[in-house]
Amino acid sequence: MSLPYRLAPHASLAAACALLLSACGGGTGANDATPQATALLEPTVSPSYHLTPVLPPAPDDIDANGSNASALRAPTSVSMDASLLNVSTAGLTADNLPGSRRQILDASKPMATTTTSFYSPAQIRALYGFDKLPAASLNKGASQGSGQLIAIVNAYHNPTIAADLATFSQKFGLANCTTVATTAAMIASGSPVAKPAAGSGCKFQVLYANSAGNATTAAPPVDKGWATEIALDVQWAHAIAPMASIVLIEAPNSSSMAGALALARKIGANVVSMSFGAVEFSGQSSYDSLFTAPGVSYIASSGDAGYQVNWPAVSANVLAVGGTVLGGSGLPRVESGWTGSGGGVSAYVAAPSWQSIAKPLAGTRRAVPDVAYNASTSSAVYVYMSPNSQTGGNGWMGAGGTSAGAPQWAGLAAVLNATRAAAGKPAINGLPAFLYNNVASRPGIYTSTIKDIISGKNGTCALCNTRSGYDLVTGLGSPNADLLINYLAAL
Image (cartoon, rainbow, N blue to C red; front, side):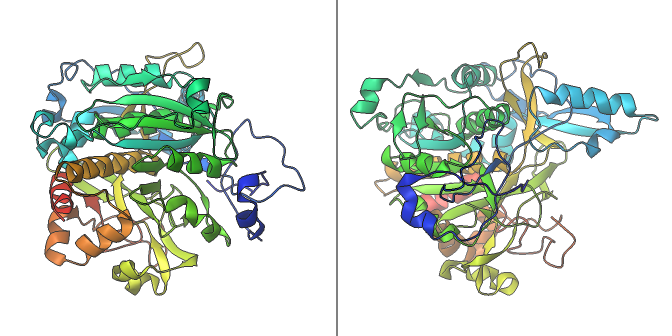
């Protein structure tokens, strides 16, 4: 999704913004204000989620007791009219999805069918190897991210996110998160978020960020598209790291993300998840300081437009997550490159020294993505949003996009840091460099800890195909989480 660039005020980054002479960005949210001619430049970003064009049946209660029993069976599959494949699933919301579905079905004549699948947290955890990590009781919850703080940065407001997270957790037998209400006194203290301790359970908190990078009591307006993104990000970061604490930071609009990112650093987050993007632009490196906090892992979706380079994923300080498609009916994991996976060679960012493995494809420029994860709506994940009079249904939707992969890699990073902390080791400082230097550069380690994706493409260009080793569709590949975490935790 790449719509016109817009102007936006941002006083705290005046020096950086003055350097931005030209740029292009993503689509605006429904509530964006009219730009002012004298405003400074900041990229307008779009969420990078997709919804399936059909609503899934509500999941049953097989996992509600914490048994993870659904991991032993195939994902729920729904046959649908193949005409629905022509529906653009990017940016669908719970409100317009049923209408799009009826419109296409009414226009259809002969009915060819196709199938879309819906995965539970237990099924995804088993496919990627998280279920092979030690039980939480054996390491004070380190294998579930205890003691770590994940900041999820988005725009606008989701008014039901705490209740929806509780419903999601109960349905799938995940650890419940204690909701912390942010008060004016907490904000005035300068420390609105308490650092979680090792062995502690999940706490969930929402902060509203202003353009200066401070917390405020003023909630942003509601935007239904961004609310859907928020639900996906929060629920699936929690699915992977259920004992990690989560702080959702909501920017006032989609052109003021820098303040929200600055606030993520102020509160001491260990991992920052960013499922949004804009087409890269000439002054993007001016924002790199937003992604350089010591001991913090910054993770971003690479975009859903296929062969295209997006910011902030292109920053050399950010781990860019591309997309795959899960196939088969369960274990073992069958995976191919997703057609929408954002990737390519940057026009502006020099190749980091640690990304030498990409030089045959990218030359002297930064290549994206770095890694990959399930993203296709044909292998969607369950997401819950409170139903209302407009959406009807049971509240359950199927979601995909590289938006789904970024928060799950954030969960992986939280588990990795918690495991390192349990062994007396520091948090990862610069996740992309750490991953390339310690995994990609060591063939034996690479082939065991990362699944190399060798089928699929994200365009028609010569570089748009997956291949053995690094490629511009899936990067290094997708994680064998247990092996990757155990290896990196020991370094």
